[in-house]
Amino acid sequence: HNNWSQVFSSEGTSIISTASADSATLATTTRFLKFAAKGRSTATFRNIRVSELKSLAVSTDEWPFGNAMVDDAPATKTVTINWTNIVATVKTTDPHFSVSATTVGQKNLINQSTTITVSYNHQEAGTHTGYVVVSGEGREARIKVSGSTEKYSQTLTWSQTLTECLTTDKVELTAHASSGLAVGYESSDPSIAVVKEGVLEIYAAGTITLTASQEGNYKFLPAKNTISKDITINKATPVVAPQAEILVYGQTVGQAKLEDTIGEVAGTFSYIDIDPNSILPAGDYVFSVLFTPENENIYNSVSSSVALHIQKAPQTIVWDAQQNNLVVGETVASTATLSSGLDIVYAYTSCILSIENGLIVPENEGEVSVVAYHPGNENYLPTTVIVKDFVISDGTVSAAPVELTDEQISNARKYLKEGKVFIDYQNRTYDANGILVNIY
Image 1: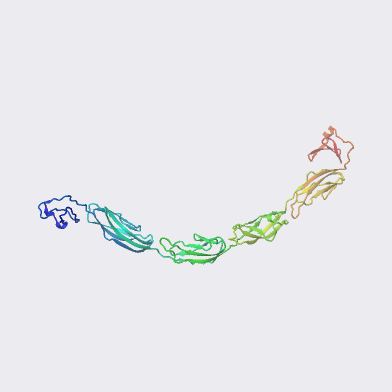
Image 2: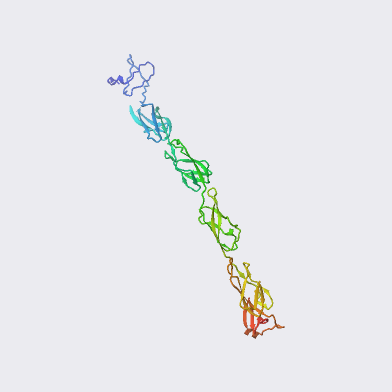
């Protein structure tokens, strides 16, 4: 245009060239372009291209952070990003570093600046190096960032007095790490004892060495020291109170079940001073017994005493299939039996018979009731009483059977004995058909 007063040479760059094409970088403040051909009145200019103004730069290209400890507050630094007519992204190449903004810039603005904060985060120990990268629309600027984070040191103490214990003890271990982290323990012989959740778990008696240590974590280094303790573990002696089952005479001592009334420890009892196959008279006894624990790795065997009561045995008498009609002078065997095998006692009020050594001796005619029993003794209880009725005759009968008439049978006294019907008529005994069977 012809308004030359608006041309400010100081704001532009002159191109003096006879070449068919040339280029120049214009100042960011350039507003007008002037074309002229020196020494000529006319000239032709073709294909004039003006590019869009863009710029991107950072205030520093390297920023080291100092040393810090894990979990310290983030260290921060500020960075100025200068930009013109551009939108750029901001990111870090190492996750230990972060930025306060992920984009900067705006279109159609020139000579702008934005300040962002770069943080070095101390969640993990180590030496860390990376870049803060600002890039967009073909332009890029980088800031090298670096720093180191260190772990804290820690020490162990273990003031607990621990030289010996019993296999049944519950021992809580008290080693302490200055970091407050849980202490680990290693047993020299895991078959004897190990440590679980800070408590000594014992499997058997013996001697072990426990070593306390702390391996550290993301924040703390392993403890500078370990501590060891030698421990002697002794078997525990159980407390038992044996009780014996009551026996009945005739049973062996070993048939009396022995139980522990306390029952805190599983195990079995055995007799020390008597053969378990022995059969003893009824009465009260005290015997020595040995308790053998089920887990002999943990408990000692222990001797004790037990009271044993043997009560009298019952006995029964049976008197079946005995002949009730006897004849004077004809001896018969008693069929009475006693379960204990002892001699049966017979009692009778009428002395028309005698019983000795199991033989019944009829001596006179008549009727008699006989009692069979046993009164018991030091080992057996008394029996119940069995009563038998006997009829004794002289054994003489008429040459021909004597029979009752129907009328006599009807009028005579009848009775039932041993399931049979008998007729009593004029001092004679007849069967149910009226035939004489006995004279008395």
